[in-house]
Image 1 (cartoon, rainbow, N blue to C red):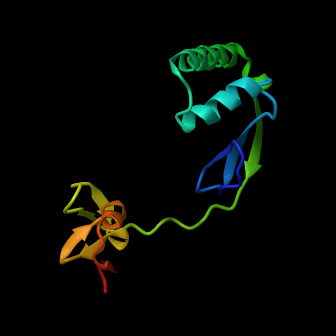
Image 2: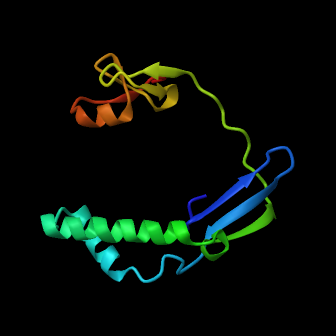
Length: 132
């Protein structure tokens, strides 16, 4: 479930027993400058010198995390969870545009051709599902 957290649960389907791994709040330390630069980089607003500084900060942060003991970085605990039912398996069809496989219910028919949703978004013609 996406709850906007850096948390992952791994569980056995047959028992519901699992482990929950949560990134500890603040484990990355102060990252104000790194975060500001990350946001500017995403908007392509860094010059060459700033990109080099960002890379240096990013590497420094990775080295810091690599040196941390896992107990400083993560909260790990045993859990029991109710897992969702197994997913229904659908056939895979090939997109006539990009050639990639796509789950049949997610494919679209466009001008009589099977396309994935990404390729369908690039067309201007009306799109329908494969089943109608």
